[in-house]
Image (cartoon, rainbow, N blue to C red):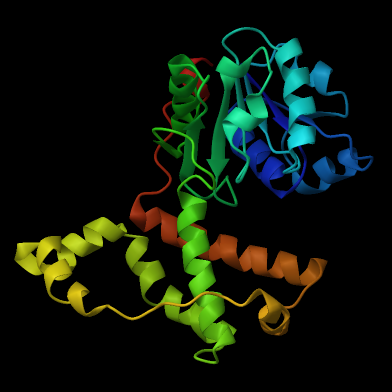
Length: 298
């Protein structure tokens, strides 16, 4: 049985652990938090997991590592230093980082050729996408292996040609979110109405086709070129930017609409996951795993 080491028992790490466990991997999860055993017992019920605060011990003998620790360069440098020292050549060291470049994480690391970003969208166990982002020193074999593993989990791994801050998913998300905040700040629309608008239009559309495919269809038989030359030529308005000084007003509105605290979070997460599962099946997501474990190994 293939062994995966999950580093970090936060929201992302726990979700990765479920995903690998469901695919038949032996899962080790490492985190220095004192309540690790309680977290695993509560959130990973039904899975056999080895939980330890000793990262070196968790890394020895691993076939794949998925790191999901804090988004801090100094912490990741320490984590990946330990991983490099206690894993063998050929073992992919993947980071779930959504903001740190692989070249930054791998700087000075003797296993830089094995370090790659495997950035999921939350929650990894449900969302199909994993962005696979190589650094300048990442080997082609590392990228190939990471793609193979993620495909084996039923994910859709997308390889980026090179690293770029925010990768692709979060760059698109930032632009969209900035405009959403700006529109609320300008009094154009309320928080909950904007969410409903997106769910009932762009969200639904982009769940079935991407923006370029949408453009190809939007132009009719003449395709996207027709759309750009006609409707697109009239979209000349300025979009504006959010005002950082007025951010508290938006945050207050979001909290008023959706609440805060553990109970509100769990309720929203359950609703999100139920809706996501309902949407995935008719869209043929996730992709069927390539085997009970990764790479054909049982």
